[in-house]
View 1 (cartoon, rainbow, N blue to C red):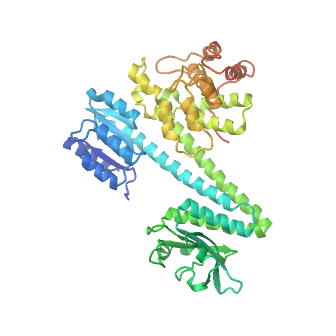
View 2: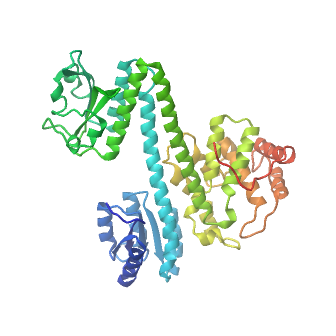
View 3: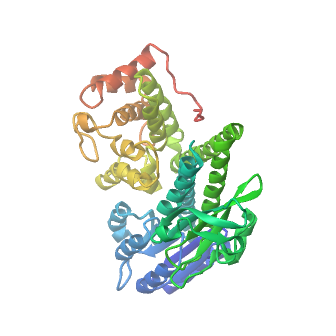
Length: 502
């Protein structure tokens, strides 16, 4: 664990003086920086510790930067890697970008030249962490939703046990309820290898969980509850109360499959499930509280949805901030794509997936060096190949996010063409998603109507001429017709500011 406000950086360069100077500069700015002159030693430390960004020289003895990059990403695929290279190895650095490197800078460079790509790298690292956190919260929210669905108390308790046992990989789960006499608990529901022996067992109130049964959720913070081992072969055990109107109405007992203490995140998730079960049991008895609980659940889901939307917009803004010429491009493409989808009467789920994909369709360009994105002249073959690689890079960045729409596939296909001449896979029209066909037309129209570093704006008429002349060859005929109708009959215009609210 580290306390640096800005982040933790690993620097690897066999030039001792340069490595030391970079570490000192970053430390002075507030980063925690660790330097190494040996790739093998750096890799050994990387396996044991966490780093936000790794900065590595390509020309290293024994283990060069390309090999080190491959091994680092094999350990942690989300690591952000920045390469340092001489002019003679720029093509190697460019190849490394395709294999997972974030950016590169050429030697010699001023120390401050490192700060811009490092700042961008930390932004991406933080966005990835936020996405991971949201994904975990969404998973817990789904479990809570399943547990809180309408049903009899027995069904609710079994759903709770199933959710904990299946999702947390626990060794044993049991739910205790008070007996009619109130002086003991009995095991009402259980999961795990000893379920038959435990089911129906009666336990004195003061011995329910190794002598400890918390009376309120606050007591789950007591560290005694994080490592309780009533049996020699048992792992860590935690007990969470099930309350009814503030009174103890049962207990959820969870034993891990190993001896590691429950993490704060696991305790929080189990607490959410326990509270959800309490509410569900109350719903089964009181219809008025059922409505209130459902409202609270909807608010929670809406907050998560808003957070996810904000993260999506932040990622889009990060991409566009690297190139002033495309500022707002993704948002305007999303505006046109949505209008075309509405005119074509796409189902709501497809329209929403298309909107999200449009906002993020150029995410892969975040791994393209800024000097290529902003180059005023024509691109050479290597530079153009880097540009053409951005749909694949976008897929790699977004594929593990738990979208309910095929966002990453839409982004992957948005430069494919119906005659099979597109990239990256030369897909024929029947293999291209409808959403990707819409996105490709919207992307072309917006890009041609706006200025770029290498040319002035061509205007909307030129853009409409392009899609008209290539209707049915490059672009889907139905999509082209809808786009032309929007501009020529319905007066569609790009808004200077696009609202992305739900």
